[in-house]
Length: 82
Image (cartoon, rainbow, N blue to C red; front, side, top):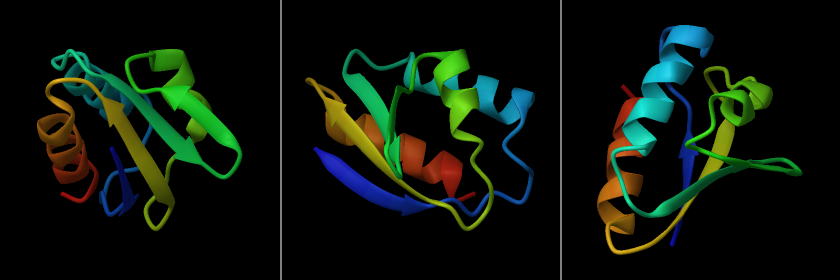
């Protein structure tokens, strides 16, 4: 399952917000990846997520595969658009 999302967070996506995003992703059993341009990173990896350098206005695709994939994508989208 995939969902395109435009990042709308008011805070820049530096260490603390990225850490919260990774913690949120780790609450789900599904495999979760973020795709942006030519990069695909594991959403459960702090180093991978930091390599994306997400900022407000960026378009990212959330990919999830597993029993809780719909819930995972919904929660991650909610986090990124808050």
